[in-house]
Amino acid sequence: MKKTRVLVLAGGQSEEHEVSIRSARSILEALPKDRFEVTSTVISREGRWLPAPESARALANGSAASGGALVLHEAATAEGYDVVFPVLHGPNGEDGTVQGMLKLAGIPCVGSGVLGSAVCMDKVMTKSVLAAHGFPQVAYRLVTRAEFSSKPEDAISKLAALGFPVFVKPANLGSSVGISKARNEVELRAALRLAFDLDRRVIVEAATRSKPREIEVGVLGNDSPMASPVGELTFDSEFYDYDTKYTAGKAEMHIPAKIPEAVSERARQMAIDAFKALDCAGLARVDFFYLDETGELFLNELNTMPGFTKTSMYPELLRAAGVDYSALVTKLVELALERR
Image (cartoon, rainbow, N blue to C red; front, side, top):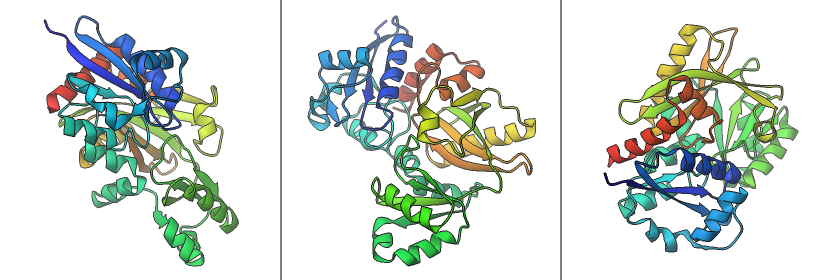
C-alpha cells in the first residue's frame, strides 16, 4: 500500500516556538510508519524556512537558529506531499496565512482553513461571530491604536464603562502575551500601551463577578465533530498569564473537571456549536469561564492549533475520550484528506 506523505511544519514566530517543536517531535514519533512517510520542516523565529539539516538540528535542540530562506520562496517544496500538518501557533501560522498558502498550492492541511483560522485568531472577530450566534460571553470593547492615540480620554471613558477590573489583550496574539489586568484608569492606560506595542487592535474584557473556573473542551472532526470530556485548569495566580502557562508546576490539569454533569454537557454542546459557527475543521480547544455560584458558562475563545505535545491539554482531553495520541494524529491527517 502506498504511504501517505506528510509534511510537519513546526517552529514559527510566536512565543510558542519551542512548544511547537516539541509538538512536532511527538507527532513525528506517533504517526504510524507503516501508513505514513513523514518529513519535518522548521520555520525559524524570523519566519525563515530552514533546509533539512538545519530543521533536523532544530528538532533535536528544541529551538531553531536564524537563517534559511523566505517561506514563500521555499513553500513550493511542499508540492508532492499529500498533507501538511502545520503545528504552528499564533501569527503567521495559526491565523490563516499558512492555510491560504497551502490552499493556493492545492495541498490539504490539518486543521481549520483560511476562514476558521483567521476568525479564531482575532479575539474581536471571534467574539463578534459568537455574539451573532447568541453565545454567552463577558462584556467587551474593541479599541484601536489610532482611536487611543487621537482621543485617549474618550477611549478611556468608553472602556471604564465596563467597570473595573478589566482584562486588556492584544486581539491577535496567543500564549497570554501582552495580557494585563487593570484595576483602575492608571493601570488601564499602562495596559493599553503594552498591548498596543504588540497589536493595533486591542480587546478589553470585563471581569466576572468572582474568579471563574477555567474549563476546556477538545473538539475533533469536520462537519460532524465530537466533543471530549471537560477538563479544568487550576492555578493560584489571578489569571492564566504567560508565567503561569509556561512555568512548570504553576498550573494543573484535571480531567474530567469536577463540575455538575448538566454543566459538562452544556459546555460540550456549546463547544461543538461554536466550532461549527466559526467554520472550524479538524480540531479545536474551546475555552470557557464557569461560575460555581450561578452555574453560568461564558465562552472565552477557540484555539484552532492548540499545544500538541503528548502531555498538552488537547491530546489529554481526547485521551479521556478514548482516542490515544497515535490514533489522534492519524485521525487528523484523515480528516484533512476528507476535506479535500
